[in-house]
Length: 253
Image (cartoon, rainbow, N blue to C red):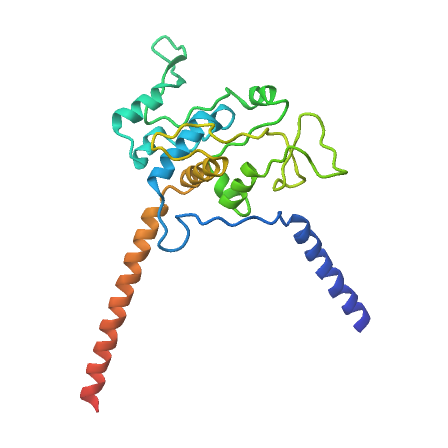
């Protein structure tokens, strides 16, 4: 009986341990993101640079269907700037009075317009690969921002000896399996930042990750501010209750 229980326990451990190890991602280099920690906040200048990266590079293939143009006001864009950014894209609307669908310029209330009309068109344009929507990417992957940063900076021109990469695939040290259909998306000086920040590959990657994290968690600053206020309130309340307790017990003794 003891042997049976021991064997059963060992099998259960293996059944749990093997999938867990198989799902472990690659070791990620942890970055010092400004929004990490209970007092962390987004750097709005970095978010604006990140939006520029998404606008000029990422949006050619990737959508952000859960983000509306009006949300860009948080980054410091004026109402007129938001309207101008939205108006660069066309969306299908309708039906009109005649029952027909029509195209119009996007409005601030519209979500970010996708680069392709449907998934099949996206696959055709990308050799069969479907570029994922980036709205929640920073929350959907283990490692979050560090994982995305690792993907963006993890491309290698030459794979290790003995590793063969099929045509149309690229070697990436962070991507599971190390074979990714996306070509290296960024390089040094690929964008020209309006604030004069030097556009190294690493800087571009960090700015893009910051914007994607904001897209997935736009309420983070407000949540952190509320958390600080709650902590202060609890601390003050604790001091008041302690003082009240001392006063009550002082009269009893």
